[in-house]
Image (cartoon, rainbow, N blue to C red; front, side, top):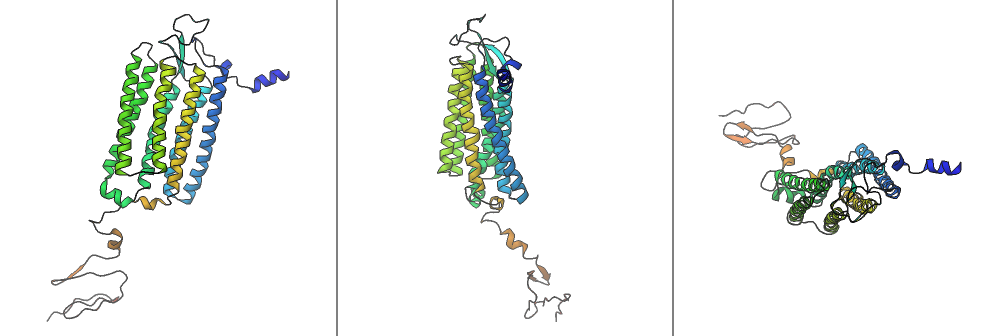
Length: 337
């Protein structure tokens, strides 16, 4: 009786959602690991949701925008890991190499379980991570300098290029994992090429335009090191069938925790430490006029051939000669002899 209760209280995802029609598939150990990762992303989402509500209530704009990014990332990744831990979101593809085998497989190489749900999660979360990186880079630099050296179009253009390149990288890995022949490595190669371009754009923009350094530079280097480890993980799992499905989940899970929990946490902390969003308000550079000073002065009034500015906080301006006298009374036309 006690043993039956323990079985009911344990992980039964493999029994409820069996991997039918595949030879190389996830076991209960792999599902247990995925549930643990799901719990971490779920806890992260709850923490960021609480911070989001607090900053929204206090009206701190920059903190609000900075927390919204890791909150979205944690929600999407928790959704993905819940799906994979439940042994859902997968398809069966015959492997190219026969490195992993089973005694009951009909084909040689056998049919491997490919979880496409992780690629969908990356497709949604990678642009958010790039946005957070851009926000932190702009926030840590003097905004007047940014406004003078870069326009909004240039900032948006750089971010769009990074997002499109990352999407190409993810789609290349997804399509390659769904192909059984050796042509899958062509998509893997194109994914590497796209990511190399993204890496060049990111570091050129962050180092030259935003002059990032210190912790931000360390985070950039660490993130892109993990990105290239994704390529190795893909080659060992969905691409080359070298390691088991469970081992592949551990490899990808560790990388996801580092890239989508640790890195966004540090980036959000950097942005939050800067204070209010008013520091990020773009103003005209030194070639223009100070908008705040312009607001304190009304347009000039014409009197004959003389233009006289009138200040809002001045109660009496006395003129000489033929200049008009302006007081709090109703202004009168000057008498010209």
